[in-house]
Length: 115
Image 1 (cartoon, rainbow, N blue to C red):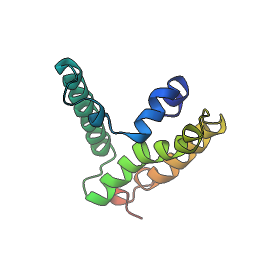
Image 2 (tube, rainbow, N blue to C red):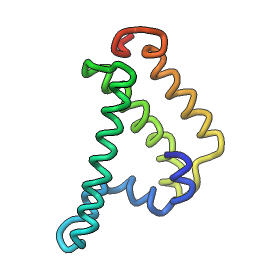
Image 3 (cartoon, rainbow, N blue to C red):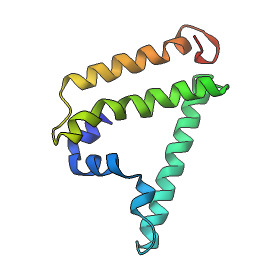
């Protein structure tokens, strides 16, 4: 998310304000709507696969995984993007450390990531 936001600042700022589904409805070409559905399905499947890989079978653990890989990186880039800037280089390390800490219960054997 951090790397992509730096490489695509205009797109990243746009997605801060809208969901992708908000942008591809009505008069948008069917191929674009289909591509958006495909990408959303790919994201959902990827998150489920990651949750399964971590053994997150309960809602709290599943939330922990999705929070770590979606919400945390998104929150980290948001202030800079809203200010019309690129996320600082230090953001990469901060996100990695925060994600690692958030997923630590899975890595240390606590069931379902609940601490």
